[in-house]
Length: 270
Image (cartoon, rainbow, N blue to C red; front, top):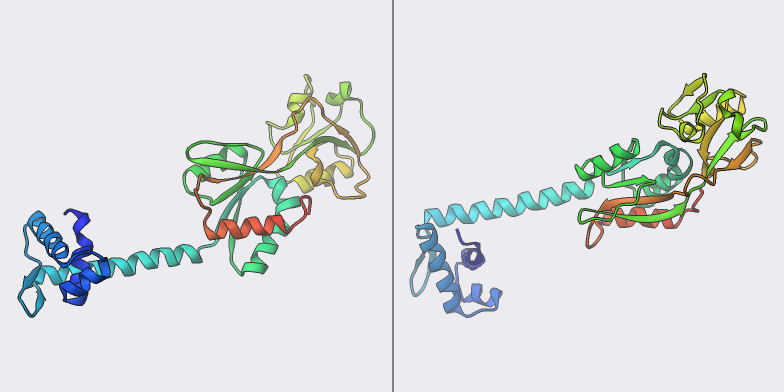
């Protein structure tokens, strides 16, 4: 089927009138008639019975017209469902706990829309958005490709935190509180601590350090005012930015635009 000619058929079938179809399409009546004839030749079926006074649809014409009507309804249903679907967000755990939560609350209250939040590590976030699992991801990875695009939101500084002052050259003598076995502490010290506590919660990591369970490396925005911990900036680690990554849309969908508004209306370190 040559779909270039289907619109002429649809308008004629809708109005059962060549003249009205031509008016709707803003083309000559003869052009409408010719396009339908070419469509019929292409599919090998007569769709319209012509006369000087009436236009009638053949059985095949009726079935094709009905099919297109159903298609319109199905297509509308698809986009309506998409509008109603919750925004799917992938995020690093630390960002969710101390930065993203108030933004999500602001989004839900302002637009009365739902959201699905998934906590993952960097690699899983990138893989997830490429496979359509997320609408947005928030991480420390910048991406700019034909498929994905990142927008920098703010800078993040990593700090070494402890309950009491520590000597950098003696880090291996202290217990380590880490998020995973790829934690920055393993890169900071050549010798590894014999006591390692792995806990996948930035809040719990900070609370364990406050309780004297060990030392940790955390983003500075995870620390609340008055935290009473000793901190040391880590110049050896490049200051990573925090990025929002989405598919490389020419124009952002409505839900993403709305979430961006929620981000803009919140303080960077809310």
